[in-house]
Picture 1: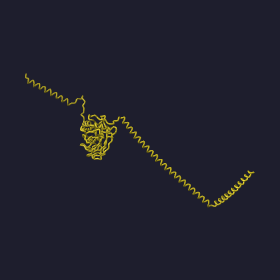
Picture 2 (picture 1 turned 60 degrees about the horizontal axis):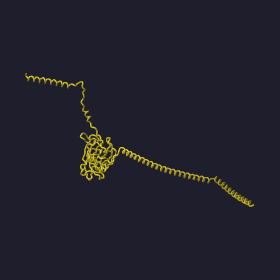
Picture 3 (picture 1 turned 30 degrees about the vertical axis):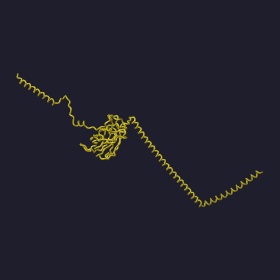
Picture 4 (picture 1 turned 120 degrees about the vertical axis):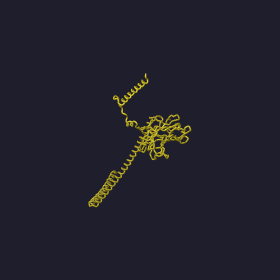
Length: 371
């Protein structure tokens, strides 16, 4: 058998079959199956909607020993403004994105360049001397909210966003030396309010005494935000203190919800009482004022009535004297006066006669008694 011819023929047959199969596949691929559903390719607009950036959200506290500011208390914090580079502002507790936080409201009287927003936190007030001495690290969340649209980005000018957010911190240790904590950074370039920038402060040299101890009167630390790119306020939340084992340190005075509500109720009651007392005092003052005004009015009326009476009497006297004068100068008065004088003389004479008669009668009676 001619094997070469047989092999050549088999190869030719195989190539022909392969070519026919490929042709059928191409023809099948080029025509859609009427029994199958076709799905349109996603458009570019749909892809953009899916990738649209969401506004940042605040981080919720997970540790039970977290300073959350939910109770509104911040007497352990202070705004530092006595350094040359310090921003000027005030502290308060406000709600940001549904979460209460400590707010540093910048009054923007200090220019952006070189300005540092500073907040001091007293660990002693939060943990006590013993608790503060155990601190080896501190963690917290920082936020920033733009108050002007002056930020310049690669994409636009006049953006209302905080921009770069970062800073550091420090404290005076038990050795009365300043200790710098590690810097932190983050940013927000699209939205007015940033998400959390998490910061971790560590006492890396605690073994050599670079930390706090129980003898310190007030162990506190500074949180500093520098490189402020746009007018904005700073917010602090979720402060947690950890010991050398990484365990959170309990806060000194953690009150239950019931106690917090009771304190709030007492505060409201105290405010209401103060308002009531003020209203009572105002009412008393008004009553006293009205009383004095009425008294003065009565005195005035009395004086007016007295004056009117005296005037009336004077007028009557004047009229009487006038009438008397007119009668005295008339002829009728002379006649009347003569008769009056005559009657008076007659009355006097009769009186004398009656008197004499009475005396005579009395003598007669006495004589009769003797007999």
